[in-house]
Amino acid sequence: MGTTENKAVVKAYFDAVNKGHLTDDLLDFMTDDVTWWIQQASPSAGLYEGKAGVKRLFAIDIPIFSAPLEVRIVRMIAEDSLVVAEIEIGTRNKDGKAYLNQYTFWMEVRDGKICVVREYLDTLYAQQVLFDPAGIAARLPA
Image (cartoon, rainbow, N blue to C red; front, side, top):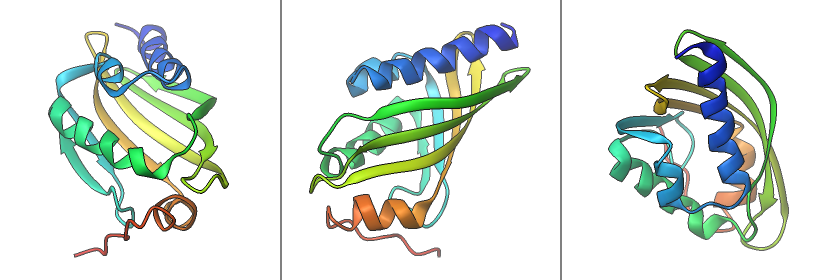
């Protein structure tokens, strides 16, 4: 697949998130051996391996949101199998407070499915607006 097709896969994934698709629907966009990494300083930091691992990651989000995610793709660039997407995600925290954060996702696509995700975001803002109200403590680097 070329860069245009790979960008279409990533766009379709974020479109599904925007439509409120459930975890299992989102996992259909991924290979069985997918990996998803989130930077340190987030309660959800770490490496999640396989669809079961990503499903565990998605389960962390359940208590922190009170509204569906609103995803806006700011821009995407692609080279070979890599697609980098700058994203704005808006929602409401568990107490109804507005949340709008900027994310960058580095996603690799293999055979029309996402196989690697590296997620970057403003972790302090997410901690203060999402995780603290949900009673989820930040992880400290080892």
